[in-house]
Image 1 (spheres, rainbow, N blue to C red):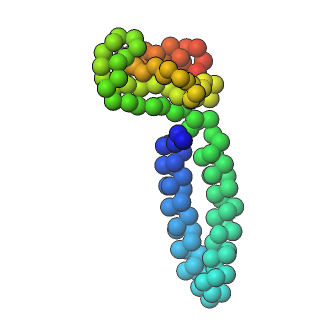
Image 2 (image 1 turned 60 degrees about the horizontal axis):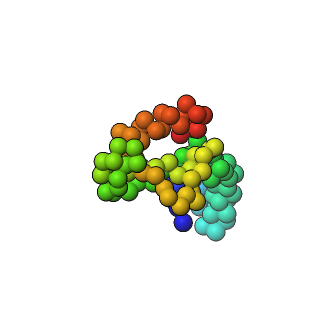
Length: 122
Ligand SMILES: [Zn+2]
């Protein structure tokens, strides 16, 4: 399984954002009891976070996914270094690549520029 760490990180932050809503609603609606106050807080959270979650899980802005490996041989210059490869972007998918090509940082930047010129959204 490949994890998109940008999406995952945002998702964890988004969960924290629901904390103040819960705290405020529980504070102000304390007279109706914790159970009903929590129901109201979750309703408010659901109305807001449906849209936030939809963005997190479907936005192509967050889609570019890179794989990083240590000690690879760069396919362009042959240097052994930390290697990078683009796995997935909006209109680019190398997730099923049997022979993935890694590039050193320098060559990866050049390749990224080349991909951008071809219309790949990084
Ligand atoms: Zn290189």
